[in-house]
Length: 194
Length: 194
Image (cartoon, rainbow over all chains, first blue to last red):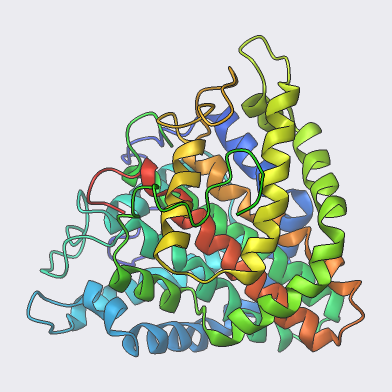
């Protein structure tokens, strides 16, 4: 366990994910997500770990330059909440590393459900005790998978690995980001519809 | 208008999409979807139009080889519903062309919402009057954006266009597919959460 406030991967007190093991297997199958992707993500870990802060700079630059995104980190009157941005940044950096090394077990699934709740009105702001916007719409939560995917490619290219390996790492990263975004959307779905 | 049964793009009797113009603009911004993507998709139209049936063969091969997907086209007792598969195939082929030429206007948004309802229990099977599985889970609906994205790349490569242009067309295709999938998920979200 790390000392990042609010970070709860492998916290046994989290409620279990309502996603059943069979549903999760079928979800990975539809995403074409298999052992080769897990292996490619392990290789991506070596490449991305030393670049985490630079990646976060890109992502925070994107959020900061888009008022419709910055408002999710801001008060009702439009003031960005610095401590909230900082707290999320620490967890987001850890998420990059975790995404490359994920075990996809019950603890990992429970943590994804918790991350989903933290974007939804049922859980947003509670972890950090802040008064920012009360909800991130599901459409925005899902859409951000694209920048989170696209912006990582240049950092993978910097590895100097072969173009084929960069493609494999990036394909695996993209599928994994999609997988996360879909699981994070679970609390937004009508009961029984997810 | 074409003669494809159940095809309703530009049907003025469709209910309007509940997605507001501002929400739609913000959604495209988060997806990094802009005029260069629209232009790249127009170029992709030339490349993909003569290959629509071959693309559908790949997609139907994928569905047919995955029991957890084929069951959405099957009866309760597991019999695939041939007329349903055929009717969807015609609309899916048209969707490839429409995706390359989309106007992203109110009629287009209304049609995306209708397509979403046809995957959800509120509308599934009604268009074709069939007795297949009553609902496609939101997680599966979203996950299928990955194969729909990945499998199109080889067909773009066949264009003989430059690698940079293939990349641009494929990036635009992927963003557009994700945009569609998100809009199709609208009927699954708790009221006010989308």
